[in-house]
Image 1 (cartoon, one colour):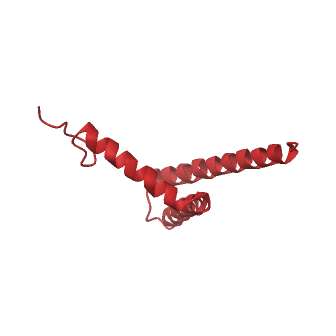
Image 2 (image 1 turned 60 degrees about the vertical axis):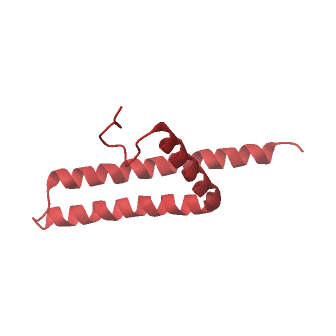
Length: 101
């Protein structure tokens, strides 16, 4: 039986898939929460800069309105998600602080 073709990112079998998942888990263990948070904030910032650039291109007459709208929506969704994660972290911290030892 031939491997499935399509968007598999070079994965040809279940064994390869589980191997890649194991590699990703090991990589994430090395990073730590603070690095993960920094990377995520950086990605949100990048999306907002891309949206700003798309808007500037649109206002100068060079850009595409569809591209600008998509960039703006990506930036908005990623920012809202980051805010919700922050809110959950703050709530978790406050709950821990209320616990009696």
